[in-house]
Image (cartoon, rainbow over all chains, first blue to last red; front, side, top):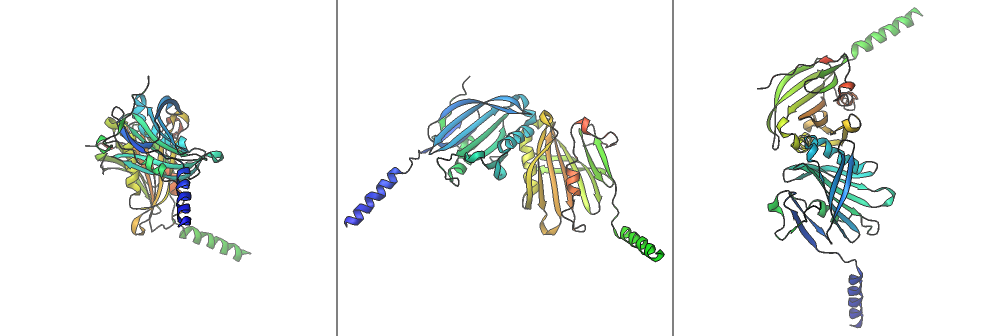
Length: 185
Length: 191
C-alpha cells in the first residue's frame, strides 16, 4: 500500500516537471483573410523578406513560442507584383529550403488554394522547420514551425498541427478565434 | 585483310540499319507567346481543351511532335485576366499532372537567372497501366500557363532516356537566350 502511494507521488511529480504546454487557441484576421491555431503568447513583429524576383518587402509576423517550438505566421504583401504570383511563391518556397536538407516537399491544398508544404533540417543542428506557403489576395502567407534543439523532439506532431491549421474560409475558423491585431504602421 | 575490312563495313551498315532513325533537334520560337524550346521531329500546332476546378474550361495551344516513340508537347493557356491567381492555377495544373500516378521526381524548376527568374516545377511520373513515363515542367509567366511534357511510350521502352530532360530543359523565356536561327511558330487562333 505504502509502495503504491509512493509510486503515485513520484508519477505525479514527474508529470509536474514535464514542460508546460500552453493551450492551443484559434486566431483569425478578417482583413488578411486567413485563420490558424497556435499555442503560447502572441507577439506581432515586423520583418524583411528579400528575393531576386520579389525585391525587398516588409513582412508581418505573428509569432508564438511554446515548449521550445517557434510558430510563425508570416504575411508578405506582394500586391505591387501580384501578376507574378506563381514565380513569387516559387521563389519563397525555394529560398526556404535553399542550402538545407529537405525532408519533405509536397503539395499543400487548403480551401481551393494550392501551395506547398516543406520540412527541412536547419544547418548546424539548429532544429527542424516545417512550413506551408500559399499566395492569396496579393500576399504570400506562410506558416512556419521550428522545433528548436532545446525541445529536441523533431518528430513532434505539433509542427504539422500548426501548419495544417490554416484556413482561408472564415467559416472554418474556430468560433472563439481571437482577431489578430491590425498590422502596425 | 580485305575480308576483315568487308566484315567491318557490313557490321557498321547493319548497326546503322538496325538503329531507329533519329531526327535532328531544332529550335522553335514563338515571340507572340514569349518562349522558345528545342524538339526533334516535325512540330505541329493544334488547339485543345483543358479543364480545372480553379482554371475552369480553357482552350489550349499545343505544339506537338513525336520522335522515336517519345511524344513531345508544349501546351499554352492564357489567363491574362487572372494573373494574380497564377500560383493557384499553376499548383492545380501540377497537381493534376501527378494525381493518381506514381511520382518519381517532383522538384523546383527555375528558368533564367536573377530577377528574370521564372519559378515552376519539374515532375516525372509513371503512367498507369504501363503506358509510359512522363516528364513535365510547369511555369506561369506573363499571364500564360506553359507546360512542357515528354512521354516515353512503351514502344520506345528506354524510360531513362535523356531526351525528355533535354526537351524540358530547353525552355527559354528571355529573348537573349533564344537561338537566332530558331523556327518561328505560328499561333493558332482560338475561338
